[in-house]
Image (cartoon, rainbow, N blue to C red; front, side, top):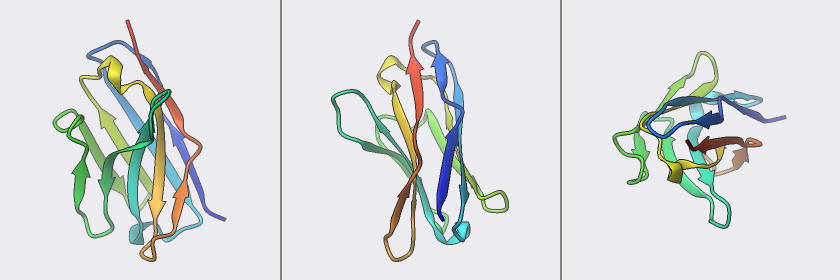
Length: 116
């Protein structure tokens, strides 16, 4: 049974930082592309950052230079370091694992609120 458990969300002031974590179980983690997505109220879910099984990363233009995705294959965990947060970063952040055969698994999401 695949499980993805996100943590690290919360309320932060503009300009602040948060680090999200997503712990995976039930998969051979190193073979999966791991991604962070977010969904703000009234908006579609969008890709924030992705770390492929081959080591490639990519980012949404809106977060380049502020967010960093990383992964620890020994701990089956992917991280999203978010710096210089803006109110428009407010959303529910989801972790996704994609297998080599394009099966997708999602976490339950963690709320990030950027507000003064």
